[in-house]
Length: 446
Image (cartoon, rainbow, N blue to C red; front, side, top):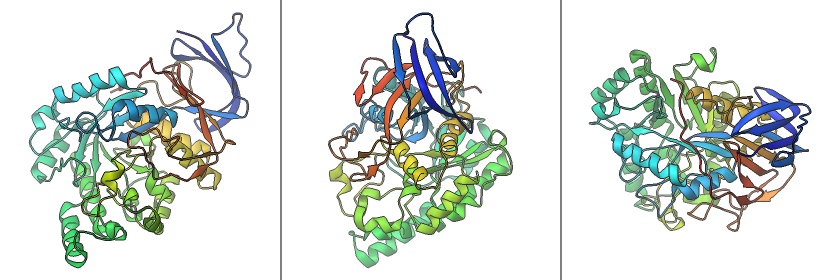
């Protein structure tokens, strides 16, 4: 494999920013030094003067829609967009068609990714009300986690049998990742809204229907069950300030049994955006108030929230343009999540060091991913070069998602991703892709 020498980069790693050279060899980080001089000429030298070099982003929650929903997206199209956005590894959800609720169906997805994914990959096994025996066959070294939907979402995999939930929490040592919204509360709120507005409910009602109460009731119940059973619990996409009080920041991440994630859209948007964006920002759980957004930021910065992810979940524009009750929830985010968070840095909300901690280091720690998520000698060379002084406006001309739209369309970011390396290979180079080499299956140190 070719050697690549990166010169004069501002490396951000483990809370420190420093200028250094970095040598990639045989897919790994071979050397990090102030001045690397080689007796021979490497295959490629990249002058990174003026750019930051960070570990590749690890996105712990995406929906790439394959198999079965490939009119919206494929593993190939969405992983390509992810790499362009600096995401070098992703963990994908089980609610495809068919749902990944048997070991064979799960392995089928791994086989697709091995042939088509630009980024490194893993998939979650989907728990249901009746597949505990199959769930317990999941190999913790080869599969990221178990996913449970405690609120309905795209492709209904709702787990609502409390006895089953307790058995799952008590029986597996795997990390259990949960979508928390109380279904009864949501359905009651929806019935009231339909009675008042009919099927064409104003989008501004979405955070009232999928309410703070629905989120808190479900997440607090899941956390109580995890404490009772000793399960390893990870709560996806917090959307309310109230929920953040359920999580600890007085112990290191490595000691936490219960962890939390926030998504880009809940940190960027709030209910004031519904008028402009409409159903394009209809997500489950809903984008809520400015107060909720500020509460999420506070919890992220004081370490009650451990990870920033995307919950990338594309639908076609035609699907999203339907009236409220028929428009699906979810939107595409992987191509622009890093730029959005860097924009928040430029606004003074978050340091670059903390951003790297939440998007790179912590997902690797939380899932025990082997040799990824850090700029360290001996680690896989999953790396991203970012130009902090290069403007880029999101438009239909540069959107890579198969669905062809973005909730950030029209937004100008004051940064751009120039190079993305996956396993030491330069997969994305200033708008051009290496379409031949593919990502690898993530492995876990468990």
